[in-house]
Image (tube, rainbow, N blue to C red; front, side, top):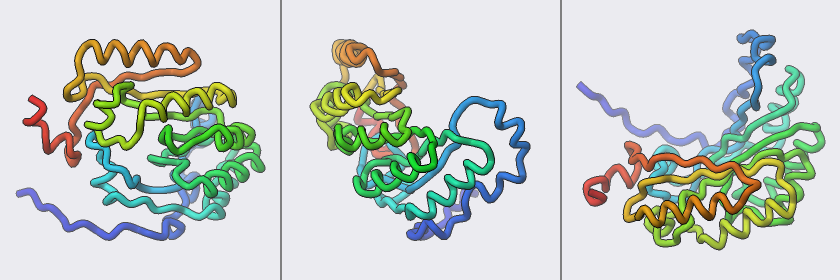
Length: 231
């Protein structure tokens, strides 16, 4: 028998959640220090957008909740105290609030940390990217999916191909050390010519790292509920 629990209310005040660093003493950190990579940090939960392939909207109910800057600073200082200096923000949309992004960038710069984040192309601009890079940003990730507007519209991305060009060109001018883009192959309505064109354009931005994934209708997404209509 499958029992489905009722949805629990979201935690709106994320400062109530214990810090991840509270449990660091339970691990052999000497072993962790020998591994490459970044320490993961979540500064917010959720995303207000409704991309048909993403389960975030269903999980977080189209809402986004934030930790305070001071709460995040406390965690970052603890991470530093354990001998780590590189963090990766796992937020769905790190730069959605410009003022907050600048505040966090300045905190990270003050602590002398290097860091990465994921965001949308329409949520950055050259001025903001420069502040981020000047304060330790070393990696930024964009979920582009396709360079065809008809596909972006079908995915309900609420972004334009022009947004992607503007963001990537701004990253190049500012000198973001690493730009990673994600794309999906086999999207509904996409032709082989569309896919080849997206790959060609992606490769033209020779300063980026591009990853291509097979389109997968994940349970709980609009894409999953409409699989039959895609054939």
